[in-house]
Image 1 (spheres, one colour):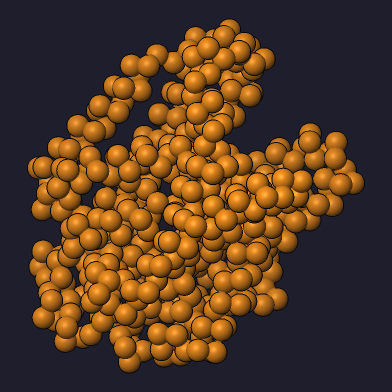
Image 2 (cartoon, helix red, strand yellow):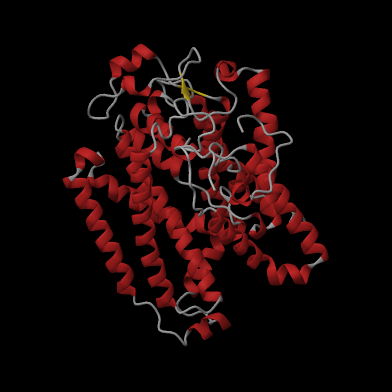
Length: 450
């Protein structure tokens, strides 16, 4: 759970599919790209950097951790450098020293830089002409059989989307203006974040449609706003949410509509289900989070919780540490001239050049069909979910995905075509249902429950 996961394997479906989605619906070439990137980072780059060259004094820190440390290897005291307005106190920051990260956490950010740059150049090189052709043909192209059959239903009126966009933008702007003490983000930050989400939705949707892996905008949104608006962690995470999560939800929305298109579900029904589901999910999520914060003592503070407690919040911990790195301290003091990790910025250039080299190699050897299957956004971003995901999650995902994609596809192709997606959906649904349990506990912990 806190190392390189050699030999660690699980068949627990939530552990398999919770971070990289279901391995059953990912194409085999995407699994191979993920495996190559994962194996290179975890079993080559990390050991060499940690034990071989002790890069950035890596031996002082745990090999796999999302926590932040002082130069001496002690846990960084974040609360000591924050003032009453949740802004950085520079005097106290200089007293405690620069922030340091574990080797794995640092490398994750490195390859995150390369991933977002490679996404743009990969889409331009391999799909640029197709995107333009589809755009020109969108108004006069021939309708396929699915589109013809969907004509039997009433289409969604465009003003539904525009009205929803307008209402959410106005509500968000009012929050930024009238609740600025809490939100910290200025109104122009919302406009900027929305523009980033709009620009990146198309290229990342293409990567998702072809590989079932979605590249994140979390690092680039944090980086950009951290440079512009340093010292305000709440503003940074708000900007990331409006820039990154808006794009991720747009991709998910498109994916659901694509499924509805092929299954001939009425478009208006799909829209209403999405809208009502979003309102319900958002309300329930906030309610449950509020209840947990009030009812579980020391929630998310793993050092203060009793042994065996499930409330360690690995994903939330990464989110919090990211707000410190990018928002409170700022990228200039970590990845810029005032920090120790400035060399990591070269990964932006490397990621941008990589797909161009693959494309040139494909043009030079067009008969080699395996070359265009090299997908650098997936390969470089393979470990983007680590942490909070662990090596065990990745090992299980790749093993199960390989078994289904190779053996079943080869020997039971008809079964695969008929039942693979049904099986994947059944596993997802059953896992969710199994998580709903009636417990009668003797204490606040999980023990002695039925």
